[in-house]
Image 1 (cartoon, rainbow, N blue to C red):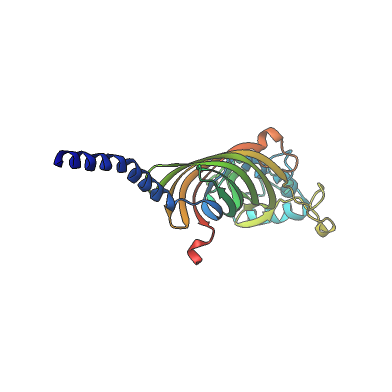
Image 2: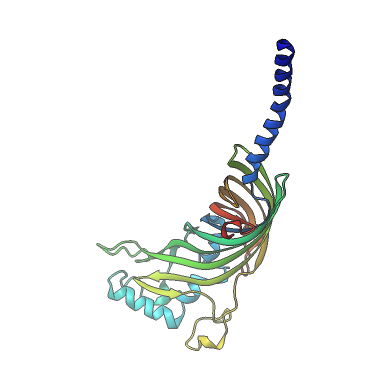
Amino acid sequence: MKQTLSLLLIALLLCSMPLQAQKKKASAFQTRISGLSLAVDAGLLIPSAKQANFYSGRPGNANTIDRVLRSEQYGTQIWSSLVNQGLISPSAIPSYSAFTIAEYPNMYYRLTYQVGVGLRYDYPSGWGWMLNFDYSQVTAAGQFLLSSDNGVGIPGSRQYVPCDIFGLEKRILIDFSILKRIPLTNLLDLEISGGADINNTKVTQNGMVIGGHTYSILDVWGGQSPYAGSGSYDYINQGGIGFGALGSIALGYNFQGAAIDFGYAMRYMQTKYKGYNDNDAFAMQHTIFARFNLNNFKLFK
């Protein structure tokens, strides 16, 4: 009798083990977000230097150094300022028309921020989708060399006058991606996603700093030489709408009703600029981000 009772207890214990495991597994997934969520993200944006050359002021670009440097309105101001500071000699460069650009800049983008909001939907299977809207303000920078002696060789003077050049643009990104969350532990997930994006770029500034003074080279003169009546032309945005593809990987921490993701996103995208070759406008850009996903607003209940 005792042996029969013992065997029955052992059998009941063995049968209950799969049920306990399933219950434990189910409770572990209760913390996962599911359904519709609001996503808020912020991160570090690393743009491609390839696209920054739109702001280099080279001949053939929408905005050129020569257009301003060799204009009577601004060229005279620049020449007088450099002579007064002793950066050039009037015997070597008798007027603004004698300016020579010894070297054009190689532009790069400074590290900047990216912030955004979005909607996502997570299915119990771990699959989901996300629609995201991001904003960033990007600054391009570089330096060109203005010849200070045109080969005359002035004792005690430098051969070149270094001049900074910069550009500023605003970008809006709209992403749609498919994602997959893979559970690692009770609270941690690995998220992988891929999708497509549309972006809109607005060029707001393109300028140069010569002898401590800033001059805009943004074309508000309709392609003509700068003159006093520059207000005759309305500035038309030199950016435009482009498209691209993206992929990302993130580590997510889950808690009741929400999740926090820390990840990396890579985009191969086209940034549209006036007169810029479409092939040159395609480049990689990278983002390191943190994202907060609020699921069904359970934290406010």
